[in-house]
Length: 96
Image (tube, helix red, strand yellow):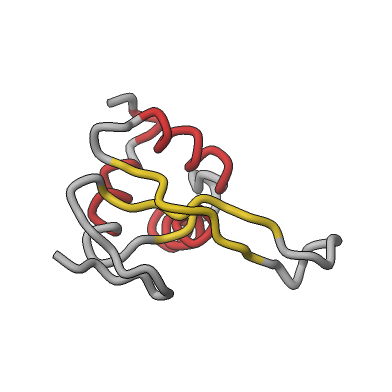
C-alpha cells in the first residue's frame, strides 16, 4: 500500500462496528491524523471504490452541511466491509 493512502487500513478497522458515509469517515480520520493529512470525502470514495476486495459501496446517503453555500443536501457513498453485513437503517451497525 502506498504511504499516501495509509489511512485505508484505519478505515477498514472503523467499518468493523458499523457502516459509515464517506463524509463521516473523513471527519473521523481528521480526528486521528489532524487537518493536514485528512483525505476529503471524494478521495475516500475514489480510493475505496478501487479496493473491491475489502470494501463495498452499500448505498448513497443524503448529507447536509451547515457551512455549505448550497441549502439542499447531497448524496455521499455509504461504505462497509465486504465481509460484514449491516443494518439497513442509521446507525448501520454490523450484524455479524
